[in-house]
Length: 635
Image 1: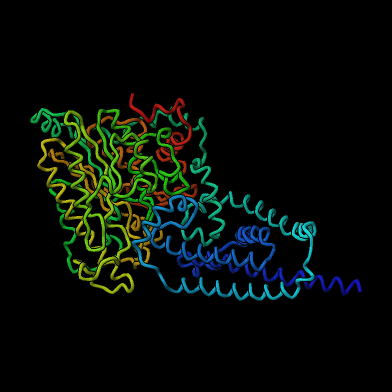
Image 2: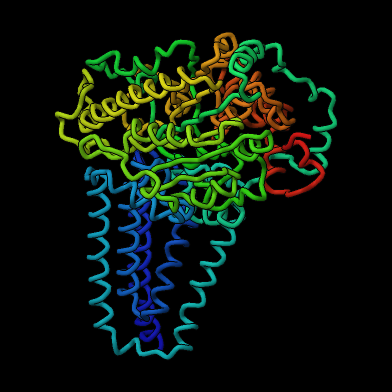
């Protein structure tokens, strides 16, 4: 009798446990299949991290079980949440370039506004997620039938429930603790938020890692201590200015412009970060029917051109403007959208603050709402004297069919703001545009003025609309340059794109790029630097020096304007001479154009130029007003 009782109870326990384990694994797959090309990496997920991922998913099930006291109901809630999470991440990753992590959810309002311009994606992965969801509901239905059948056997008080579930909860805690310890050794890779890392370590694990960096977003570079930084700063070998003033030799042209007009002593500076402005021909052979669709951009007399390397692939506007405006790299920040969590009144230096100390009057402009990525808080905290955001400051931004916010109208507002600024002080204006933002199937085909000569399947229409709207950007920018070319004030204009369009990851490359080459090319956008006082920058921007990571432009523009540099900004230019590219995922390009990962494997982590920069960046972002803070400011 006792044996029968034990066997009966054993069967009663084993069946729901099997159902729960199967449901937890299916929930994990719901989310995991939302990652691009996951099937190609299906067997790359490490077993220990599989346990960690299942434990994380089971924690959600356990929470709902504690609330509902029924496993069928608990699993049903979790199934729906994982399905929404999977489909949501599937779209956000495709269109935004970053997974649906807590750092992205923090700006959900802006994300919803952005996603409204895209079409829903329904392909094989979408149907796989739905099939997994359907399989779960079948399993939940079976479990529900079993619960009803064993209803009389399950009338247990709370104490029995605690006794029954204490072992699995303890096991869950053990797995989480062990997983967290092992996970910490891989945090640098996991927190990179790349599809490959998520495939190797699992979406729930990477989600938890991103959540960890919500509290501690800035990761110390390898080997950093205040003493190690002091040693680098005391090293005589680090005091040489590789980019000396003779290389730039710009004073005579600028002084002629100033003397002839009896104006201010410094040139005005215009910086434009153009939303999703990219020359796709760098990566893919599109064979456009209008080969000259970017001609007005590339044929500006006296301008120099090059390749900007953005922090992200196919998305990450806020990351790009953070690097551009501050000179800080995203390599140490393990959360996207830094405007959301950095206090710019306390950390580091930025262009508005820096130029303000030199007597500049500044303005920041963007035609979207100020709540997006907390720009309404970040721009004033940076020190911009005037901040113009949203429809109240851009009442008529124009449209091209269903596409809103034309560059030409943004430039009209820029010119209006520029002309209204005080005439007795140098001016700095920063503009973030919006016109080229996705999706790229918003207009009927007859609005397309540029067409690809090849068939790219479902992306053909996207490419046509994208190239057509880029042509409008090129035409509008040329009009802006024509305006400044007639100005009697000396002006430097810098413009670049913030990232490539999200569909660049779906296009075939025009050549057999290596893994590192592909990651660089997909981050590449064109930049242009123009001045109206005849300074010749062409000798400077040649060879690999045409390439630059986004964070390197702040000191470069300051130097081109003939303005003094702090030690921190000079160190960036020193590093740029030897390493013109250092990406947020640790890819280095040296002066010979060779690509390597910044790691101990090739001893780049011991390079003093890179090490000093990363040490100073971390110090500036985290340490506050300490003895090394003088390196970020002019005397």
